[in-house]
Image (cartoon, rainbow, N blue to C red; front, side, top):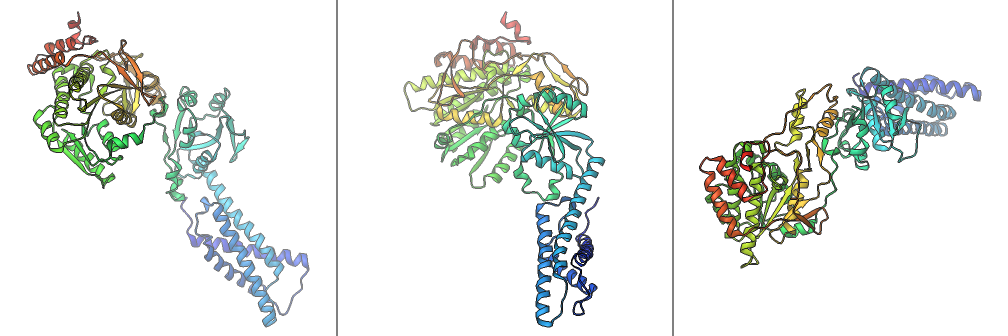
Length: 629
Protein backbone atom coordinates (compact mmCIF):
# COMPACT_ATOMS: atom_id res chain seq x y z
CA UNK A 1 0.00 0.00 0.00
CA UNK A 2 3.02 2.32 0.00
CA UNK A 3 3.54 4.83 -2.79
CA UNK A 4 5.50 3.82 -5.91
CA UNK A 5 8.69 5.93 -6.19
CA UNK A 6 8.91 8.42 -9.05
CA UNK A 7 11.63 6.50 -10.87
CA UNK A 8 9.38 3.43 -10.71
CA UNK A 9 6.52 5.37 -12.32
CA UNK A 10 8.92 6.63 -15.01
CA UNK A 11 10.12 3.09 -15.82
CA UNK A 12 6.54 1.83 -16.11
CA UNK A 13 5.63 4.76 -18.35
CA UNK A 14 8.64 4.10 -20.62
CA UNK A 15 7.75 0.40 -20.81
CA UNK A 16 4.25 1.34 -21.96
CA UNK A 17 5.82 3.68 -24.53
CA UNK A 18 7.78 0.72 -25.93
CA UNK A 19 4.53 -1.26 -26.16
CA UNK A 20 2.81 1.74 -27.79
CA UNK A 21 5.62 2.03 -30.36
CA UNK A 22 5.38 -1.65 -31.24
CA UNK A 23 1.61 -1.42 -31.69
CA UNK A 24 1.93 1.78 -33.71
CA UNK A 25 4.65 0.31 -35.97
CA UNK A 26 2.55 -2.80 -36.59
CA UNK A 27 -0.58 -0.77 -37.36
CA UNK A 28 1.27 1.74 -39.56
CA UNK A 29 3.13 -0.90 -41.50
CA UNK A 30 -0.01 -2.97 -42.01
CA UNK A 31 -2.23 -0.10 -43.06
CA UNK A 32 0.15 1.69 -45.33
CA UNK A 33 2.24 -1.31 -46.59
CA UNK A 34 5.59 0.35 -46.07
CA UNK A 35 8.60 -1.40 -47.46
CA UNK A 36 12.12 -1.43 -46.03
CA UNK A 37 13.90 1.80 -46.83
CA UNK A 38 17.70 1.62 -46.97
CA UNK A 39 17.93 5.26 -45.83
CA UNK A 40 15.79 4.67 -42.75
CA UNK A 41 17.06 3.97 -39.24
CA UNK A 42 16.61 0.39 -38.12
CA UNK A 43 13.63 -0.25 -35.86
CA UNK A 44 15.76 -0.41 -32.70
CA UNK A 45 17.23 3.00 -33.66
CA UNK A 46 13.77 4.48 -34.11
CA UNK A 47 12.69 3.12 -30.73
CA UNK A 48 15.80 4.46 -29.02
CA UNK A 49 15.28 7.93 -30.52
CA UNK A 50 11.65 7.98 -29.45
CA UNK A 51 12.48 6.84 -25.90
CA UNK A 52 15.16 9.51 -25.50
CA UNK A 53 12.81 12.28 -26.67
CA UNK A 54 9.94 10.87 -24.61
CA UNK A 55 12.08 10.70 -21.46
CA UNK A 56 13.07 14.33 -21.87
CA UNK A 57 9.39 15.31 -22.31
CA UNK A 58 8.38 13.30 -19.25
CA UNK A 59 11.03 15.16 -17.27
CA UNK A 60 9.93 18.57 -18.63
CA UNK A 61 6.26 18.05 -17.75
CA UNK A 62 6.87 15.99 -14.54
CA UNK A 63 4.22 13.53 -15.60
CA UNK A 64 5.70 10.83 -13.33
CA UNK A 65 5.91 12.94 -10.15
CA UNK A 66 2.34 12.40 -8.92
CA UNK A 67 0.95 9.53 -6.87
CA UNK A 68 -0.87 7.26 -9.32
CA UNK A 69 -3.71 6.38 -6.94
CA UNK A 70 -4.50 10.10 -6.54
CA UNK A 71 -4.29 10.98 -10.25
CA UNK A 72 -6.34 13.99 -11.27
CA UNK A 73 -7.27 15.86 -14.43
CA UNK A 74 -4.03 17.84 -14.13
CA UNK A 75 -2.03 14.60 -14.20
CA UNK A 76 -3.90 13.58 -17.37
CA UNK A 77 -2.99 16.86 -19.03
CA UNK A 78 0.68 16.39 -18.12
CA UNK A 79 0.67 12.96 -19.81
CA UNK A 80 -1.10 14.34 -22.88
CA UNK A 81 1.31 17.25 -23.27
CA UNK A 82 4.36 15.02 -22.83
CA UNK A 83 3.37 12.46 -25.51
CA UNK A 84 2.14 15.07 -28.00
CA UNK A 85 5.31 17.13 -27.54
CA UNK A 86 7.54 14.08 -27.96
CA UNK A 87 5.68 13.06 -31.15
CA UNK A 88 5.93 16.56 -32.61
CA UNK A 89 9.66 16.78 -31.76
CA UNK A 90 10.36 13.40 -33.44
CA UNK A 91 8.45 14.43 -36.58
CA UNK A 92 10.37 17.72 -36.75
CA UNK A 93 13.71 15.91 -36.31
CA UNK A 94 12.68 13.47 -39.04
CA UNK A 95 11.86 16.27 -41.50
CA UNK A 96 15.14 18.07 -40.74
CA UNK A 97 17.12 14.84 -41.14
CA UNK A 98 15.52 14.01 -44.50
CA UNK A 99 16.26 17.44 -45.98
CA UNK A 100 19.73 17.74 -44.49
CA UNK A 101 21.20 14.22 -44.55
CA UNK A 102 18.67 12.38 -46.73
CA UNK A 103 18.18 9.97 -43.82
CA UNK A 104 14.68 9.04 -42.70
CA UNK A 105 14.62 8.66 -38.90
CA UNK A 106 11.13 7.14 -38.69
CA UNK A 107 7.74 6.93 -40.31
CA UNK A 108 5.66 10.04 -39.50
CA UNK A 109 2.40 8.10 -39.68
CA UNK A 110 3.75 5.64 -37.08
CA UNK A 111 4.70 8.57 -34.85
CA UNK A 112 1.22 10.07 -35.13
CA UNK A 113 -0.36 6.72 -34.29
CA UNK A 114 2.10 6.45 -31.38
CA UNK A 115 0.81 9.69 -29.89
CA UNK A 116 -2.71 8.28 -29.62
CA UNK A 117 -1.75 4.78 -28.50
CA UNK A 118 0.79 5.88 -25.88
CA UNK A 119 -1.64 8.41 -24.38
CA UNK A 120 -4.35 5.77 -24.11
CA UNK A 121 -2.00 3.30 -22.43
CA UNK A 122 -0.64 5.87 -19.97
CA UNK A 123 -4.14 7.20 -19.25
CA UNK A 124 -5.52 3.70 -18.70
CA UNK A 125 -2.62 2.95 -16.33
CA UNK A 126 -3.55 5.84 -14.07
CA UNK A 127 -7.28 5.25 -14.23
CA UNK A 128 -6.78 1.55 -13.63
CA UNK A 129 -4.54 1.99 -10.60
CA UNK A 130 -6.83 4.69 -9.18
CA UNK A 131 -9.89 2.45 -9.63
CA UNK A 132 -8.07 -0.61 -8.28
CA UNK A 133 -6.92 1.28 -5.20
CA UNK A 134 -10.39 2.66 -4.52
CA UNK A 135 -11.88 -0.82 -4.92
CA UNK A 136 -9.31 -2.25 -2.50
CA UNK A 137 -10.06 0.48 0.03
CA UNK A 138 -13.77 -0.22 -0.24
CA UNK A 139 -13.17 -3.90 0.46
CA UNK A 140 -10.52 -3.79 3.20
CA UNK A 141 -11.55 -0.64 5.11
CA UNK A 142 -14.55 1.54 5.75
CA UNK A 143 -16.58 -0.83 7.87
CA UNK A 144 -19.32 1.76 8.42
CA UNK A 145 -21.52 2.48 5.40
CA UNK A 146 -22.44 6.14 4.99
CA UNK A 147 -24.56 8.31 2.73
CA UNK A 148 -23.49 11.78 1.58
CA UNK A 149 -26.21 14.38 2.13
CA UNK A 150 -26.21 16.59 -0.96
CA UNK A 151 -25.24 16.07 -4.58
CA UNK A 152 -23.41 19.30 -5.29
CA UNK A 153 -19.66 19.80 -5.51
CA UNK A 154 -19.09 19.64 -1.74
CA UNK A 155 -20.86 16.30 -1.41
CA UNK A 156 -19.07 14.83 -4.42
CA UNK A 157 -15.71 15.97 -3.00
CA UNK A 158 -16.41 14.19 0.30
CA UNK A 159 -17.39 11.00 -1.51
CA UNK A 160 -14.22 11.15 -3.62
CA UNK A 161 -12.13 11.70 -0.52
CA UNK A 162 -13.64 8.65 1.18
CA UNK A 163 -13.01 6.48 -1.89
CA UNK A 164 -9.31 7.33 -1.91
CA UNK A 165 -8.74 7.37 1.83
CA UNK A 166 -6.51 4.64 3.14
CA UNK A 167 -7.47 4.84 6.81
CA UNK A 168 -11.09 5.99 6.89
CA UNK A 169 -13.64 4.20 9.05
CA UNK A 170 -16.39 5.12 6.61
CA UNK A 171 -17.42 3.84 3.19
CA UNK A 172 -19.61 6.00 0.97
CA UNK A 173 -22.33 3.93 -0.70
CA UNK A 174 -24.64 6.65 -2.02
CA UNK A 175 -25.98 10.19 -1.97
CA UNK A 176 -29.13 11.80 -0.58
CA UNK A 177 -30.99 14.19 -2.88
CA UNK A 178 -33.20 16.61 -0.95
CA UNK A 179 -35.26 17.58 -3.98
CA UNK A 180 -33.78 21.07 -4.36
CA UNK A 181 -31.49 20.00 -7.18
CA UNK A 182 -32.18 18.11 -10.38
CA UNK A 183 -32.86 14.44 -9.74
CA UNK A 184 -30.04 12.06 -10.60
CA UNK A 185 -29.94 8.29 -10.87
CA UNK A 186 -26.29 7.85 -9.83
CA UNK A 187 -23.12 9.77 -9.06
CA UNK A 188 -19.59 8.35 -9.07
CA UNK A 189 -21.19 4.97 -9.69
CA UNK A 190 -23.25 5.22 -6.48
CA UNK A 191 -27.02 5.39 -6.12
CA UNK A 192 -28.75 8.70 -5.38
CA UNK A 193 -31.59 8.35 -2.86
CA UNK A 194 -34.48 10.78 -2.60
CA UNK A 195 -35.16 12.26 0.84
CA UNK A 196 -38.68 10.93 1.33
CA UNK A 197 -40.53 8.39 3.43
CA UNK A 198 -38.86 5.49 1.61
CA UNK A 199 -35.37 6.64 2.52
CA UNK A 200 -35.40 5.15 6.02
CA UNK A 201 -36.43 1.75 4.65
CA UNK A 202 -33.58 1.88 2.15
CA UNK A 203 -31.12 2.87 4.87
CA UNK A 204 -32.16 -0.02 7.10
CA UNK A 205 -32.12 -2.43 4.17
CA UNK A 206 -28.57 -1.46 3.14
CA UNK A 207 -27.24 -1.38 6.71
CA UNK A 208 -26.24 2.28 6.47
CA UNK A 209 -25.20 3.67 9.85
CA UNK A 210 -24.30 7.31 9.24
CA UNK A 211 -24.93 10.37 7.06
CA UNK A 212 -22.19 12.89 6.24
CA UNK A 213 -23.21 16.52 5.71
CA UNK A 214 -20.75 19.07 4.36
CA UNK A 215 -20.43 22.42 6.20
CA UNK A 216 -21.82 24.17 3.11
CA UNK A 217 -24.87 21.92 3.16
CA UNK A 218 -25.34 22.66 6.87
CA UNK A 219 -25.83 26.32 5.92
CA UNK A 220 -28.46 25.49 3.30
CA UNK A 221 -30.67 23.33 5.52
CA UNK A 222 -32.34 23.71 8.89
CA UNK A 223 -30.34 21.12 10.86
CA UNK A 224 -32.90 20.84 13.66
CA UNK A 225 -35.63 19.82 11.18
CA UNK A 226 -33.84 18.31 8.19
CA UNK A 227 -31.59 16.03 10.24
CA UNK A 228 -34.24 15.01 12.78
CA UNK A 229 -35.32 11.93 10.83
CA UNK A 230 -31.79 10.55 10.98
CA UNK A 231 -31.19 11.24 14.67
CA UNK A 232 -34.59 9.90 15.70
CA UNK A 233 -33.69 6.62 14.00
CA UNK A 234 -30.21 6.38 15.58
CA UNK A 235 -28.36 7.22 12.37
CA UNK A 236 -25.19 9.14 13.17
CA UNK A 237 -24.80 12.56 11.52
CA UNK A 238 -21.24 13.59 10.64
CA UNK A 239 -19.51 16.51 8.99
CA UNK A 240 -16.08 17.54 7.68
CA UNK A 241 -13.95 20.71 7.90
CA UNK A 242 -14.67 23.65 5.59
CA UNK A 243 -13.17 23.49 2.11
CA UNK A 244 -11.07 26.56 2.96
CA UNK A 245 -9.12 24.24 5.23
CA UNK A 246 -8.86 21.63 2.46
CA UNK A 247 -7.16 24.18 0.21
CA UNK A 248 -4.22 24.26 2.61
CA UNK A 249 -3.77 20.47 2.42
CA UNK A 250 -1.83 18.32 0.01
CA UNK A 251 -3.62 15.60 -1.93
CA UNK A 252 -2.27 13.07 0.54
CA UNK A 253 -3.56 15.06 3.52
CA UNK A 254 -7.00 15.35 1.93
CA UNK A 255 -7.25 11.56 1.93
CA UNK A 256 -7.36 11.62 5.74
CA UNK A 257 -9.60 14.65 6.41
CA UNK A 258 -11.10 14.37 9.89
CA UNK A 259 -14.75 13.34 9.92
CA UNK A 260 -16.56 14.05 13.16
CA UNK A 261 -20.06 14.34 14.57
CA UNK A 262 -21.88 17.61 14.13
CA UNK A 263 -22.17 19.69 17.28
CA UNK A 264 -25.28 19.81 19.43
CA UNK A 265 -25.23 23.60 18.98
CA UNK A 266 -26.13 23.05 15.31
CA UNK A 267 -29.38 21.36 16.30
CA UNK A 268 -30.62 24.12 18.61
CA UNK A 269 -33.03 26.43 16.82
CA UNK A 270 -32.11 30.00 17.71
CA UNK A 271 -33.00 33.17 15.85
CA UNK A 272 -30.31 34.78 13.73
CA UNK A 273 -28.72 37.68 15.56
CA UNK A 274 -26.90 40.69 14.14
CA UNK A 275 -25.61 43.76 15.93
CA UNK A 276 -25.06 47.31 14.80
CA UNK A 277 -21.28 47.16 14.54
CA UNK A 278 -21.02 50.81 13.55
CA UNK A 279 -22.82 51.88 16.70
CA UNK A 280 -20.71 49.56 18.86
CA UNK A 281 -17.53 50.82 17.21
CA UNK A 282 -18.49 54.42 17.93
CA UNK A 283 -19.00 53.50 21.58
CA UNK A 284 -15.84 51.43 22.14
CA UNK A 285 -13.23 52.82 19.75
CA UNK A 286 -10.46 54.66 21.55
CA UNK A 287 -11.97 54.13 25.03
CA UNK A 288 -10.51 52.69 28.23
CA UNK A 289 -12.62 49.62 29.01
CA UNK A 290 -12.70 47.40 32.10
CA UNK A 291 -14.07 43.84 32.12
CA UNK A 292 -14.64 42.12 35.46
CA UNK A 293 -14.62 38.33 35.55
CA UNK A 294 -12.42 38.58 32.47
CA UNK A 295 -11.03 35.04 32.80
CA UNK A 296 -14.50 33.46 32.77
CA UNK A 297 -16.42 32.10 29.80
CA UNK A 298 -18.38 35.27 29.09
CA UNK A 299 -15.65 37.68 30.21
CA UNK A 300 -12.94 36.17 28.01
CA UNK A 301 -15.12 36.14 24.89
CA UNK A 302 -16.28 39.66 25.70
CA UNK A 303 -12.67 40.82 25.94
CA UNK A 304 -11.91 39.26 22.56
CA UNK A 305 -14.91 40.93 20.93
CA UNK A 306 -14.05 44.31 22.46
CA UNK A 307 -10.49 44.18 21.12
CA UNK A 308 -11.95 43.94 17.61
CA UNK A 309 -13.27 47.50 18.05
CA UNK A 310 -9.83 48.99 18.82
CA UNK A 311 -10.17 50.34 22.39
CA UNK A 312 -7.38 52.53 23.74
CA UNK A 313 -6.83 50.20 26.71
CA UNK A 314 -8.55 47.00 27.81
CA UNK A 315 -8.31 46.17 31.53
CA UNK A 316 -8.83 42.52 32.47
CA UNK A 317 -9.94 42.22 36.10
CA UNK A 318 -10.22 38.81 37.78
CA UNK A 319 -9.15 36.92 40.89
CA UNK A 320 -8.21 33.71 39.02
CA UNK A 321 -4.45 34.16 38.55
CA UNK A 322 -3.65 31.28 36.17
CA UNK A 323 -6.72 31.72 33.99
CA UNK A 324 -6.12 35.46 33.74
CA UNK A 325 -2.46 34.89 32.83
CA UNK A 326 -3.40 32.42 30.08
CA UNK A 327 -6.08 34.74 28.70
CA UNK A 328 -3.64 37.66 28.60
CA UNK A 329 -1.07 35.61 26.66
CA UNK A 330 -3.69 34.42 24.17
CA UNK A 331 -5.10 37.90 23.57
CA UNK A 332 -1.66 39.48 23.18
CA UNK A 333 -0.80 36.87 20.59
CA UNK A 334 -4.03 37.44 18.66
CA UNK A 335 -4.05 41.24 19.09
CA UNK A 336 -0.37 42.25 19.31
CA UNK A 337 -1.11 45.92 18.59
CA UNK A 338 -3.66 46.32 21.38
CA UNK A 339 -2.81 47.49 24.89
CA UNK A 340 -3.88 45.04 27.61
CA UNK A 341 -3.59 45.41 31.37
CA UNK A 342 -4.25 42.39 33.58
CA UNK A 343 -5.32 43.21 37.14
CA UNK A 344 -5.53 40.61 39.89
CA UNK A 345 -8.18 41.45 42.44
CA UNK A 346 -11.51 40.61 44.01
CA UNK A 347 -14.65 42.67 43.40
CA UNK A 348 -15.59 41.99 47.04
CA UNK A 349 -12.55 44.03 48.11
CA UNK A 350 -13.82 47.61 47.96
CA UNK A 351 -10.36 49.13 48.39
CA UNK A 352 -8.92 47.08 45.51
CA UNK A 353 -11.86 48.00 43.28
CA UNK A 354 -11.40 51.69 44.03
CA UNK A 355 -7.65 51.45 43.49
CA UNK A 356 -8.09 49.98 39.99
CA UNK A 357 -10.86 52.34 38.86
CA UNK A 358 -9.12 55.41 40.32
CA UNK A 359 -5.83 54.53 38.60
CA UNK A 360 -7.16 53.30 35.25
CA UNK A 361 -10.15 55.64 34.90
CA UNK A 362 -12.18 53.40 32.58
CA UNK A 363 -14.91 54.93 30.43
CA UNK A 364 -16.92 51.71 30.22
CA UNK A 365 -17.23 48.79 32.65
CA UNK A 366 -18.59 45.39 31.66
CA UNK A 367 -19.42 43.60 34.89
CA UNK A 368 -19.31 39.84 34.24
CA UNK A 369 -17.86 38.67 37.58
CA UNK A 370 -20.32 36.58 39.61
CA UNK A 371 -21.02 33.27 41.27
CA UNK A 372 -23.45 31.41 39.00
CA UNK A 373 -23.81 27.74 40.03
CA UNK A 374 -27.28 27.24 41.50
CA UNK A 375 -26.64 24.20 43.79
CA UNK A 376 -23.42 25.66 45.24
CA UNK A 377 -25.00 29.00 46.00
CA UNK A 378 -27.94 27.21 47.63
CA UNK A 379 -25.40 25.73 50.04
CA UNK A 380 -23.53 29.03 50.51
CA UNK A 381 -26.01 31.94 50.45
CA UNK A 382 -23.65 34.26 52.31
CA UNK A 383 -21.00 33.83 49.62
CA UNK A 384 -23.61 34.50 46.94
CA UNK A 385 -24.41 37.81 48.64
CA UNK A 386 -20.71 38.70 48.96
CA UNK A 387 -19.91 38.09 45.27
CA UNK A 388 -23.13 38.98 43.47
CA UNK A 389 -24.51 41.75 45.69
CA UNK A 390 -21.54 43.28 47.51
CA UNK A 391 -19.25 42.86 44.49
CA UNK A 392 -21.75 44.58 42.20
CA UNK A 393 -22.33 47.34 44.77
CA UNK A 394 -18.59 48.00 45.04
CA UNK A 395 -18.18 48.22 41.27
CA UNK A 396 -21.28 50.41 40.85
CA UNK A 397 -20.37 52.81 43.68
CA UNK A 398 -16.84 53.32 42.34
CA UNK A 399 -18.16 53.76 38.80
CA UNK A 400 -20.27 56.67 40.05
CA UNK A 401 -17.49 58.11 42.20
CA UNK A 402 -14.97 58.22 39.35
CA UNK A 403 -17.30 59.23 36.53
CA UNK A 404 -17.48 56.06 34.46
CA UNK A 405 -19.62 56.71 31.37
CA UNK A 406 -21.35 53.32 31.11
CA UNK A 407 -21.74 50.35 33.41
CA UNK A 408 -23.10 47.19 31.76
CA UNK A 409 -24.09 44.44 34.19
CA UNK A 410 -24.58 40.84 33.11
CA UNK A 411 -27.54 39.20 34.82
CA UNK A 412 -29.49 35.97 34.26
CA UNK A 413 -32.96 34.68 33.47
CA UNK A 414 -32.84 33.05 36.91
CA UNK A 415 -33.41 36.53 38.37
CA UNK A 416 -37.00 36.38 37.08
CA UNK A 417 -39.31 34.96 39.76
CA UNK A 418 -36.23 33.49 41.49
CA UNK A 419 -36.50 30.10 43.15
CA UNK A 420 -32.88 29.90 44.27
CA UNK A 421 -30.21 31.92 46.06
CA UNK A 422 -28.20 32.62 42.93
CA UNK A 423 -31.16 34.07 41.02
CA UNK A 424 -32.28 36.12 44.00
CA UNK A 425 -28.79 37.56 44.53
CA UNK A 426 -28.62 38.63 40.88
CA UNK A 427 -32.08 40.20 41.12
CA UNK A 428 -30.96 42.20 44.16
CA UNK A 429 -27.92 43.36 42.19
CA UNK A 430 -30.27 44.44 39.37
CA UNK A 431 -32.42 46.36 41.83
CA UNK A 432 -29.39 48.15 43.29
CA UNK A 433 -27.89 49.39 40.01
CA UNK A 434 -31.28 50.36 38.59
CA UNK A 435 -32.37 52.30 41.68
CA UNK A 436 -28.90 53.87 41.99
CA UNK A 437 -29.16 55.22 38.45
CA UNK A 438 -32.65 56.66 39.01
CA UNK A 439 -31.39 58.29 42.21
CA UNK A 440 -28.31 60.01 40.79
CA UNK A 441 -29.85 60.87 37.40
CA UNK A 442 -32.30 63.27 39.06
CA UNK A 443 -29.53 65.71 39.91
CA UNK A 444 -26.99 64.76 37.23
CA UNK A 445 -28.37 63.69 33.81
CA UNK A 446 -24.79 63.11 32.60
CA UNK A 447 -24.09 60.52 35.31
CA UNK A 448 -22.99 56.93 34.83
CA UNK A 449 -25.48 55.00 32.71
CA UNK A 450 -26.31 51.66 34.32
CA UNK A 451 -27.51 48.98 31.90
CA UNK A 452 -28.47 45.37 32.68
CA UNK A 453 -28.68 42.37 30.33
CA UNK A 454 -30.35 39.04 31.04
CA UNK A 455 -29.33 35.77 29.36
CA UNK A 456 -30.55 32.24 29.30
CA UNK A 457 -28.06 29.39 29.62
CA UNK A 458 -24.83 29.82 27.67
CA UNK A 459 -23.66 26.90 25.56
CA UNK A 460 -20.15 25.72 26.30
CA UNK A 461 -19.60 27.99 29.30
CA UNK A 462 -17.85 26.68 32.38
CA UNK A 463 -20.16 24.30 34.21
CA UNK A 464 -22.85 24.28 31.51
CA UNK A 465 -24.74 21.10 30.73
CA UNK A 466 -23.21 20.33 27.32
CA UNK A 467 -19.55 19.86 28.44
CA UNK A 468 -20.90 17.81 31.37
CA UNK A 469 -22.90 15.54 29.07
CA UNK A 470 -19.89 15.14 26.75
CA UNK A 471 -17.76 13.89 29.64
CA UNK A 472 -20.43 11.42 30.70
CA UNK A 473 -20.84 10.10 27.15
CA UNK A 474 -17.06 9.78 26.72
CA UNK A 475 -16.96 7.75 29.94
CA UNK A 476 -19.63 5.38 28.61
CA UNK A 477 -22.50 6.88 30.62
CA UNK A 478 -24.85 7.07 32.26
CA UNK A 479 -25.98 10.57 31.31
CA UNK A 480 -27.75 12.24 34.23
CA UNK A 481 -30.76 14.52 33.73
CA UNK A 482 -32.50 16.06 36.71
CA UNK A 483 -36.07 15.76 35.39
CA UNK A 484 -37.66 14.42 32.17
CA UNK A 485 -39.66 17.63 31.64
CA UNK A 486 -37.00 20.24 32.44
CA UNK A 487 -36.49 22.87 29.72
CA UNK A 488 -34.02 25.72 29.23
CA UNK A 489 -33.31 28.61 26.88
CA UNK A 490 -29.89 28.49 25.26
CA UNK A 491 -27.54 30.85 23.46
CA UNK A 492 -23.90 30.67 22.40
CA UNK A 493 -21.11 32.60 24.08
CA UNK A 494 -20.58 34.87 21.02
CA UNK A 495 -24.33 35.59 20.95
CA UNK A 496 -24.27 36.50 24.64
CA UNK A 497 -21.38 38.87 24.08
CA UNK A 498 -23.12 40.46 21.10
CA UNK A 499 -26.08 41.19 23.36
CA UNK A 500 -23.83 42.80 25.95
CA UNK A 501 -22.10 45.03 23.38
CA UNK A 502 -25.35 46.03 21.69
CA UNK A 503 -27.05 46.75 25.00
CA UNK A 504 -24.12 48.90 26.04
CA UNK A 505 -24.80 51.17 23.06
CA UNK A 506 -28.61 51.14 23.15
CA UNK A 507 -29.04 51.82 26.85
CA UNK A 508 -29.83 55.33 27.99
CA UNK A 509 -29.64 54.24 31.63
CA UNK A 510 -31.67 52.08 34.03
CA UNK A 511 -32.88 49.54 31.44
CA UNK A 512 -32.92 45.76 31.71
CA UNK A 513 -32.44 44.22 28.27
CA UNK A 514 -33.61 40.73 27.39
CA UNK A 515 -32.82 38.66 24.31
CA UNK A 516 -35.36 36.96 22.06
CA UNK A 517 -33.96 33.47 22.51
CA UNK A 518 -36.49 31.59 20.40
CA UNK A 519 -37.91 28.33 21.67
CA UNK A 520 -36.79 26.62 24.88
CA UNK A 521 -35.03 23.26 24.60
CA UNK A 522 -35.95 20.11 26.48
CA UNK A 523 -32.83 18.90 28.28
CA UNK A 524 -33.84 15.25 27.84
CA UNK A 525 -34.04 15.72 24.05
CA UNK A 526 -30.64 17.42 24.11
CA UNK A 527 -29.12 14.49 26.03
CA UNK A 528 -30.59 11.97 23.57
CA UNK A 529 -29.33 13.92 20.57
CA UNK A 530 -25.85 14.22 22.04
CA UNK A 531 -25.76 10.45 22.58
CA UNK A 532 -26.90 9.88 18.98
CA UNK A 533 -24.36 12.36 17.63
CA UNK A 534 -21.66 10.38 19.40
CA UNK A 535 -22.79 7.27 17.51
CA UNK A 536 -24.66 5.54 20.33
CA UNK A 537 -28.26 4.54 20.94
CA UNK A 538 -29.92 6.22 23.95
CA UNK A 539 -31.19 3.74 26.49
CA UNK A 540 -29.27 0.90 24.85
CA UNK A 541 -25.61 1.83 24.49
CA UNK A 542 -25.75 4.68 27.02
CA UNK A 543 -28.37 4.94 29.73
CA UNK A 544 -30.11 8.14 30.87
CA UNK A 545 -30.74 8.50 34.60
CA UNK A 546 -33.10 10.99 36.24
CA UNK A 547 -31.61 12.32 39.45
CA UNK A 548 -34.36 14.71 40.57
CA UNK A 549 -34.40 18.50 40.63
CA UNK A 550 -31.50 20.03 42.50
CA UNK A 551 -32.01 22.52 45.32
CA UNK A 552 -33.45 25.75 43.94
CA UNK A 553 -33.84 24.40 40.39
CA UNK A 554 -36.86 25.26 38.21
CA UNK A 555 -38.48 23.02 35.64
CA UNK A 556 -38.43 25.99 33.27
CA UNK A 557 -36.81 29.41 33.15
CA UNK A 558 -38.52 32.70 32.42
CA UNK A 559 -36.98 35.70 30.73
CA UNK A 560 -39.61 38.11 32.04
CA UNK A 561 -41.65 38.33 35.21
CA UNK A 562 -45.34 37.63 34.59
CA UNK A 563 -46.13 41.22 35.65
CA UNK A 564 -43.48 42.67 33.39
CA UNK A 565 -43.97 43.95 29.86
CA UNK A 566 -41.45 44.70 27.16
CA UNK A 567 -40.89 47.46 24.66
CA UNK A 568 -38.96 47.05 21.40
CA UNK A 569 -35.60 48.52 20.48
CA UNK A 570 -33.92 49.23 17.15
CA UNK A 571 -32.79 45.59 17.19
CA UNK A 572 -35.83 43.31 16.92
CA UNK A 573 -34.03 40.56 18.87
CA UNK A 574 -33.43 42.82 21.90
CA UNK A 575 -36.27 43.99 24.15
CA UNK A 576 -36.44 46.25 27.19
CA UNK A 577 -38.10 44.75 30.24
CA UNK A 578 -40.36 47.05 32.22
CA UNK A 579 -39.77 45.92 35.81
CA UNK A 580 -40.95 47.01 39.19
CA UNK A 581 -38.83 49.97 40.24
CA UNK A 582 -37.78 50.67 43.81
CA UNK A 583 -36.58 53.83 45.54
CA UNK A 584 -32.87 53.99 46.29
CA UNK A 585 -33.62 55.44 49.71
CA UNK A 586 -35.40 52.17 50.56
CA UNK A 587 -33.08 49.82 48.71
CA UNK A 588 -29.74 51.01 50.04
CA UNK A 589 -30.44 50.44 53.76
CA UNK A 590 -31.89 46.99 53.06
CA UNK A 591 -28.90 45.91 50.96
CA UNK A 592 -26.40 47.28 53.48
CA UNK A 593 -28.22 45.32 56.19
CA UNK A 594 -28.17 42.20 53.99
CA UNK A 595 -24.42 42.51 53.50
CA UNK A 596 -23.83 42.99 57.22
CA UNK A 597 -25.92 39.92 58.08
CA UNK A 598 -24.12 37.83 55.45
CA UNK A 599 -20.91 38.23 57.47
CA UNK A 600 -22.54 36.80 60.60
CA UNK A 601 -22.59 33.21 59.29
CA UNK A 602 -26.36 32.99 59.71
CA UNK A 603 -27.64 31.75 56.35
CA UNK A 604 -31.34 31.62 57.33
CA UNK A 605 -31.25 35.26 58.39
CA UNK A 606 -29.51 36.14 55.12
CA UNK A 607 -32.07 34.30 52.98
CA UNK A 608 -34.97 35.71 54.98
CA UNK A 609 -33.86 39.27 54.25
CA UNK A 610 -33.31 38.40 50.57
CA UNK A 611 -36.96 37.35 50.43
CA UNK A 612 -37.98 40.69 51.94
CA UNK A 613 -36.08 42.59 49.26
CA UNK A 614 -37.38 40.29 46.48
CA UNK A 615 -40.94 39.28 47.48
CA UNK A 616 -41.32 37.04 44.41
CA UNK A 617 -38.39 34.89 45.62
CA UNK A 618 -40.00 31.56 46.55
CA UNK A 619 -37.60 28.69 47.27
CA UNK A 620 -38.08 25.32 45.61
CA UNK A 621 -36.66 21.96 46.60
CA UNK A 622 -34.64 23.78 49.26
CA UNK A 623 -34.24 23.88 53.02
CA UNK A 624 -35.29 27.54 52.83
CA UNK A 625 -38.82 26.66 51.74
CA UNK A 626 -39.89 26.90 55.39
CA UNK A 627 -39.21 30.65 55.24
CA UNK A 628 -42.00 31.01 52.66
CA UNK A 629 -44.71 29.56 54.93
